[in-house]
Image (cartoon, rainbow, N blue to C red; front, side, top):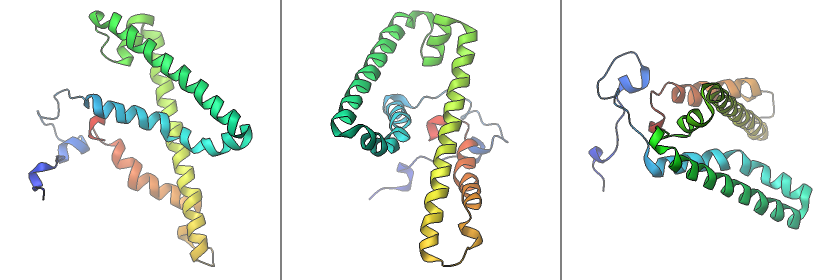
Length: 176
C-alpha cells in the first residue's frame, strides 16, 4: 500500500500562474525517462494511427519495407543530433533548441520554434477531430435521435475545455 506522501502534488500556484512561488520558479527538467517518454509519444502518437492505411495502400511487404527504411532514417538523424550536441556542448548547447541556435543562429532557431508550435497545434487539432468523430459514432449507436450532446462541434469544444485547456495552463511541461 502507498502512502499519500508517495505521490507528487501540484500547488495551485504551479497551474494558475496567478500567484508567485519561489519553489516553482526553479528550473526543473523531466529527466531522461520523461524526455524519452515525451519523444516517443510525439513520434508514435499520430503516426501510429496512419499505419493501417499505409499498410493497406502499400501492401504487407511494401509497408514493412517503408517502415524499416524510415526507421533507419530516423535512427540516423537521432545519431547525428546526439553527436552534434556532444560537439557543441561546450558552447552551451544543452537542448535541441540551443543546439539549433548555436549552429544556425537566431533566425533559424525562430523558424524551428515556429515549426514545433505548428506541429503541436496540428497534432492537437488532429486528435480533437478524432475524438469528435469517434464520440459521435458511439453516441449515435445508443441514441436514435440527434441529441445535442452528440454534435461533433460540441464534443470537440467540450474535449478542448476539459482536457486541453487545463494542460495548457501548466507552468512546466515536466508536470505532464
